Length: 274
Image (cartoon, rainbow, N blue to C red; front, side, top):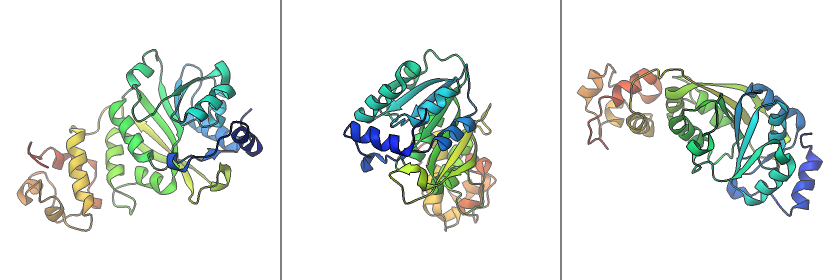
């Protein structure tokens, strides 16, 4: 049984816990929502799901129902203890920080597909997603619940108002879509913003040949002054001639460039570029 709103409040009260603002904690308190997330994760027997931030274990229970093997990483010791109590032997709860956990050790025994499913704190969502995409190639599929504005940035197409640094960095590793939106009413406590699910499916092969670090540097420089032409925003690292030699018009702006163009620019960076 997944947690209802009264169950969430009871578990918090019984264990002397409360949502911690500094960790961005908001617990999903609606059985239909967590089962919908588990359904959209498209996991089952033979799959390994790594859940980040299980909280009180509500989504964990829904993922267990799919038959997948579940490892849940929780940074809060109090919540980790509650989640372990809730799921028993049906899942593995690890008290650790997903930003620093040893993913190689975590996935050492995994033989099938590896999925990440998570209700992510708003303050670390983008950073953690990109870090997993860059450092953990074993993860082929992510389904994460984040602030709607963050979701739009992760899945934005070139030219849209939401298109920016996260859009390009995610596109290097996978294809992002928004399969569902989640209202604030299903959370305890209720956030002041709407949320959305982002699905990221890793590319079978990289779409471009580029060093991720170089790509990140040039993209951050370009979008750091997104209203300026590239010949101005990239001036500290690329000359106007180098931009043109990459096949990109120096008068274009950051939001007009797709992944291929950004990769071409990154591949022109001199080694000593800032």
